[in-house]
Image 1 (cartoon, one colour):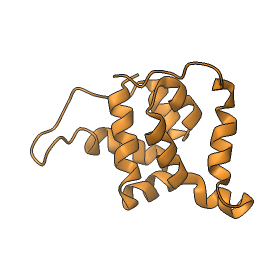
Image 2 (tube, helix red, strand yellow; image 1 turned 90 degrees about the vertical axis):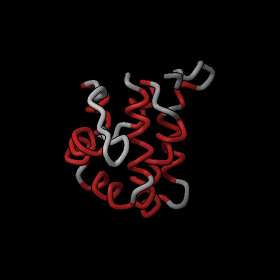
Image 3 (cartoon, rainbow, N blue to C red; image 1 turned 180 degrees about the vertical axis):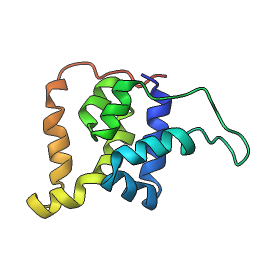
Length: 121
């Protein structure tokens, strides 16, 4: 897993309301756009050509599969905060406050008592 690349995606999308909305409504297009033009930007004049998502990472991001991302070693906090932003409104409307966070915990409960995947690069 290119953890840096995935974590950079999680961080940047979560902190930009326009990108977040694009990811919420059209994840495939946003992942492709980010990977081709946003992610490689290092500064206003420098572009990186080194990184790309693995097929598994790309698929997990497109499917908004936070469990798979966690299991591949995405940073727990970045993963949680992005997907709270993506899903909280929908879950809160259906089930009340903290509904998504509780669902996130349930879906990762099989990790209780086990060592979490490393987030080290």
